[in-house]
Image (tube, rainbow, N blue to C red; front, top):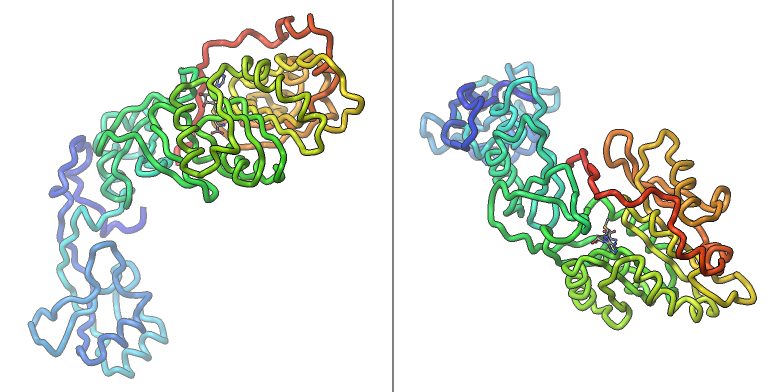
Length: 431
Ligand SMILES: C[S@@+](CC[C@H](N)C(=O)[O-])C[C@H]1O[C@@H](n2cnc3c(N)ncnc32)[C@H](O)[C@@H]1O
């Protein structure tokens, strides 16, 4: 942390309930006595040396109460004597006939003048990590507190809310996503308990109840990357659509979309967001299990789509489990088309903890699909989720050998291990 001078009083250490008054202290800062007539010019010339703190004045009344002079307060970390001024600053002061003699002014520093890391650094146990990073989802700050921070959780929440414009609710998530619907368990630390929020991602507006659906602001680049591969007239089949961050921008760029999510709340907000973005005529929504969606609406649409010229994209973003759904494509269709030019492109997401992430996800995709994808797919690194755990996207053309394999293979269970109860630490990075 920068300046000792701005360090709050030592008594605040260990505080668990925020007492803003306890942060008030008086500090002495250097000041220059400047005639009011040249005040603006002096302020311009001393831009780099004046005090810069949220809520602190840079000019105060002269202590001698003379209306002809003001005191310009200087940054105590930059200016300690008249030799601290740069050549240009000293020259300017001389030209305005301002004496370079420093005075000291007693300034009251309060909670409002401190940054969140200064407050938290002074309160939390010394030597322990005070990282107060959070993800922002509309008006909600979403934290992932460590064990040693938990006794201070409400204070941390209050400080984050006080110090971040636009944040009116702070929540802490547990490290575990243990529901089928991928939403975090969370606790409100400070502020209003209103979880319905509005966000903008890549120019598209989404509204949803953050406590009941999946939303991750760190996926915006990935959403954009995939949407940029979709052309007007293409069809997108989004198996795990959430509240629409692939489906809606794809529809906005002129694609026809079938979007599915098993979570009734996601499905409701997906429909809401289609209306909000005026693409309801381009998106058909479904509230089915992914496998039922593949073997129902997708199976119905594919034969006609594959006869057409426009591309077909299948998006499967459920990284903890999506690979296990790939066997649903085995023997999905019966009549092989005369040529295989318009086979769907699949974008299937997966986490990997393996040393060789690429090989790992390709090997597991191949096993589930019952077809070797080595050298027939590309793997894209999406993001690091936790130490040694990455999120990857395997992209491949759905092989006709899989789509048209004989029917009994479709019902064979995949060699992937049976889906475990989902317990996956999704994020340890909390900014
Ligand atoms: C990781 S989220 C991705 C949401 C969205 N595509 C995105 O990129 O933000 C996975 C979504 O799959 C849904 N889901 C989970 N299990 C499912 C299943 N068996 N069938 C269909 N959807 C499922 C969850 O409700 C959640 O919205």
